[in-house]
Amino acid sequence: MTSETQIPDIVIVTGMSGAGRSTAAKSLEDLDWFVVDNLPPGLLATMADLGGRVKDAVPRIAVVVDVRSRAFTEDLHSSITELENRGVHPRVVFLEAGDEALVRRFEGVRRPHPLQGDGRVVDGIARERELTREVRAEADLVIDTSALNVHQLRAKIVSFFGNDTGESSLRATVVSFGYKYGLPVDADLVVDCRFLPNPHWVPELRPKTGRDAPVRDFVLAQRGAKEFLDAYTEVLRLLTDGYEREGKHYVTLAVGCTGGKHRSVAMAEQIAARLRDEGIDVQVAHRDLGRE
Image (tube, rainbow, N blue to C red; front, side, top):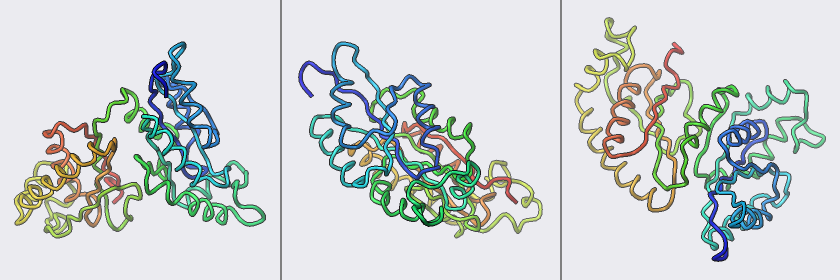
């Protein structure tokens, strides 16, 4: 980038085919981002140069990149490195979904997976997972769309980018979940609250949830609950400080118990409150609340 150019804010949208890249791109476009679809990774630096020109400068650019470039991982990594060497620090959003959800979506539109060749849809999905594995591991934000419709995905994009100014302040999502329904695939950190007594076995608490004061008070009164919150808060303080220094913008914290109804819900709310006290922008999601 030269002295005659402004440095644009760049978001790279990638991930699994069928996971919602087009919806994410359209949502960003509605938020006044300049969106470029299916750009070869090797042209990212050129796009940044064009967008950063003083005349008609484009301050926010979203680029959708997929695996149709056979050297996808290598090309994308090289392009990101080149941008960072120019003083541009792109953020990578990776859209994820489970095999079952992806197969259902491809069957619903009666289209083949772009990588399935002469095989089945699941073969294409497996190839794509392998090709995108490294990019997913290094992504700034991973969104699991398995259980999301287009409106819910749009709401997530708006929550992350609706008031985005390109600043490096950290945003956290705290997700409660039930282990019997599986781990959240987009979690950066997972903690287990099953070491606490289960309110499920207290008749008057069983129908209530961790949002209700009697359950919350019961959970917090248990031996080790406060000590856990204090210790985990200290760990998160160290991590969030480091994330901000390293330019990480988003973190998803998962808090689990058996069914995702009592302990994890109460503790997730407490963790979120403590993060807010640290000045971090936090949203809370109770993934499995209501499933029982």
